[in-house]
Image (cartoon, rainbow, N blue to C red):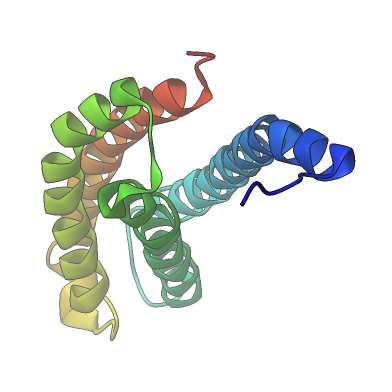
Amino acid sequence: MQTQTQPGAQAQAQTQGPIEFVERRGHTRDLVQRLLAERQDLLVAFCEVAGLEPYHPDKPVRSLLRKFCQLLVDYVAVVHFELCTRIADGGERRAGVRAVAEEVFPRLSAITDEVVEFNDRYEVLTPEKLAGGLSEDLSRIGETLAVRFELEDRLFAALLARS
């Protein structure tokens, strides 16, 4: 028994692939743009906290640090759950993206652990924490974020490449 295909159904099947491709690429481009905007907000918050040195209780350190930590954790979570997990779970077909991901994911994971540790350390800000290491910890997390952003930029470039 031979099945008849309708001309409209055949045309739809032929165009569904490219449309799906364009939609996936558009979603990826939108996600990268959103992450870059969130990264900018994160950097502004970092500069606001770092610009308060020397740190003491009469400055708005607590609220600015809380804001920075929240943006930091949110940003890292979005990268992890919306981008890295999608790629790791097989949602990315391009070999070039997968190769970059395999190279950068272990370091991104380690940096995520450092970010969570920083957030946990400063979740409750005491005068002792304020006087005993915030400046050094901010310097360290700033350097860590610079490395993370370089790794993410490599991944973003692979995701946005035409091939």
